[in-house]
Each structure stands twice: as C-alpha cells, then as structure tokens.
Image 1 (cartoon, rainbow, N blue to C red):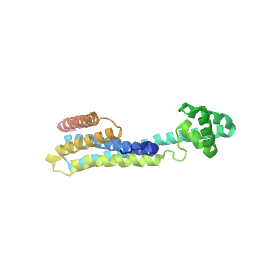
Image 2 (cartoon, rainbow, N blue to C red; image 1 turned 90 degrees about the horizontal axis):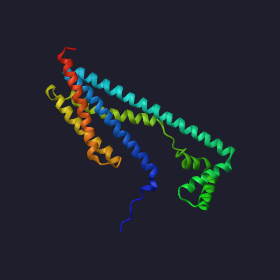
Image 3 (tube, one colour; image 1 turned 135 degrees about the horizontal axis):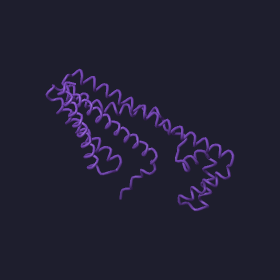
Image 4 (cartoon, rainbow, N blue to C red; image 1 turned 45 degrees about the vertical axis):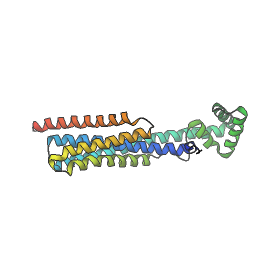
Length: 236
C-alpha cells in the first residue's frame, strides 16, 4: 500500500502558493480581457497599425499600473490591520499574561483538545513565543510572514502585463485582414486556459469556469467591436 500524501503538513505554505498562483491567473485574465476589448474596439473603427499599437500600449500600461496600485493599497491596509492587531496582542500579553494564557487554553480546547492537554500546550507555546502563539491561534497571523504590499503590487503588474501582451501582439502583427480573427481566436484560447487553470487551483469543475471565461471575453470583444464599427462608420 502506498502512503497518502500529507499536504496538510505544509498547509500554510501550500495555501500561500495557491493564493499567489490564483491571483496571477486572475491578473493575467484581466489583462487579456480588458486589452482585447480595447484593441478589438479600435480595430472596428480603424485598421491603422499605429492607432492599434498606441491604444493597446495605453491599455496595457494603464491597466497594469491600476492593478498594481490597487493591490498595493489593499495589501497595505491588510498589513496595517495585522500590525495593529499584533500591537494590541503584545500589550495584552504584557499587562495581563494570566488572562492571555487562559484565553489561549480555551482556544486550544475549542479545537478539540482536552482541558489538561490544552493547558499544557498553551503553557509550552507561551514559554516558547507567546506572541507568535496568540497570533497564530487567536488571530490567524504569522508575525514573521506578514503580507508584503510590494510583492503583491509587482505580481499584479507582471500578471496583467503578461496577459495584455497576447491581444496586443495578436492585433498588430498579422496583416490587416487577419487581425481581428487572429486576435479573437488567440484570446478565446487563452481565456479557456486561464479559466481551466483558475478552476483547477480552486478545486472546482473546469467546464463552467471555462464557459464563463470564454463567454465573457467573447461578449466584451463583440460589444467593443460593434461600438468601434459604428463610430468608424460615423466618421468619429
């Protein structure tokens, strides 16, 4: 008999890697859809390569910077909240250590340990590193691995840029008669891949995720192409 895999032993690091991978996939997906909608819309109005390249680059840079800034602000807020919670816990440990020891005991007891075992574990954890023990058990925070806003911002920037490059290159490299078909085909294929990847990372059925992704991307490109064609026909 083969022994079962024990992913639980590495649950924290595994969960963190999966979160980063999921964020990267979703960031790339946003880059694909938003840039594809933009360049296909412009292609509906004009077949000028310079105009398409300008629009695509503007969308890529604006989108990637926006994603990075938003992620930086969001994660910075989370990090500030984590630091504030740790500061409160640090003060409580200094001012009322016995009450905090009892609280940790009750938390461990609530996780299924007997009163005696929970008390002994709480005492040992407190003796080793009281703040870390309370941060992990009570707050769900690892004080040595707080969220990093710069890492999140760069990850979002790079993921969005990688996704946006596909429709940008697909719209400017082929001859004018093939630009839209090539872009649509490549974008839908990429969306099918990102939909499948996000579903697998989330342990969900990939079929619906792929359909949602492809359907949303096709709708976005269809609407923007129609609007661009109408504006181009009107001479705007």
